[in-house]
Amino acid sequence: MSERLRPPLYRRVLTWLITALADVVVARLGPAEDSEAFVLEVRTTTGRAVGAGEFPPQQGRVGRSVLALLAGDRDVVQAQLASAEREPAPAVRATTLAEALVWLHALLDAETGAFPDPPPG
Image (cartoon, rainbow, N blue to C red; front, top):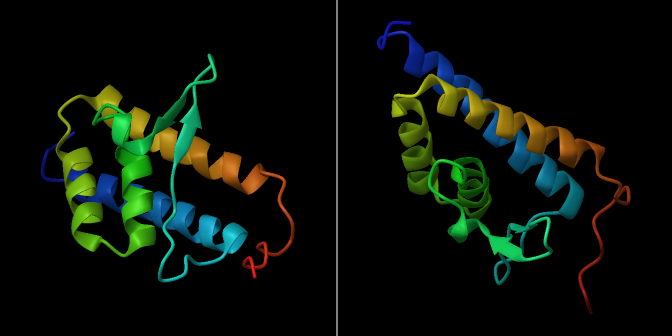
């Protein structure tokens, strides 16, 4: 596919997925208060907790983009999206989209209460 056509289409789809992920997080957990921040932590099959900062650059784009969007850091979001759209390997670009879709599916399927937990008080 032409380099001229791929990035805008790819970026629009990835942007939609990242935005949808952030929207679902806020719908499920509520917005972060001024003194709070969202944290992404994944457990490996051995039970080790891995934070978003520990993911290799290509594998962490989705998580870092969503966290940056939730934090209101548009510059980081744009940098992650630009990096993803410039990725020369089609398999990596496809994997990034698939990863975002899998995360979205998992969040939509997660069993949570109808409303976010009330703040501790």
